[in-house]
Image (cartoon, rainbow, N blue to C red; front, side):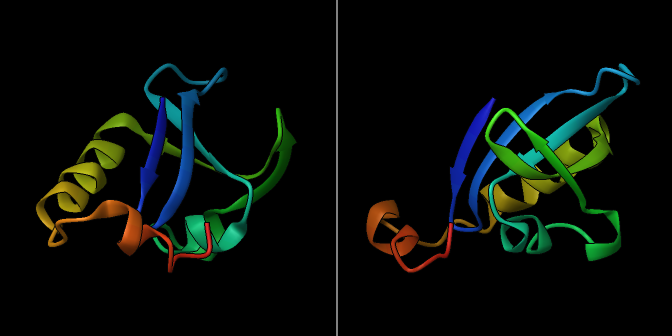
Length: 85
């Protein structure tokens, strides 16, 4: 799954070691830092993504719900252009 948000660009894939978890990946650590504690972010260098966080699917679902509920813009492109994605 690919997500473009005002937090940045994220790639979400199944975590190979745990089916209840997903790996949330980004090219820049700052993008993940907007959503997760820095201590959880790992350098992964995988398929063009340098950083990742393993999270349970429910935790990510809760984060995505909050992101959707916080939408307050009418033009994503203009809002997103100010984010260091």
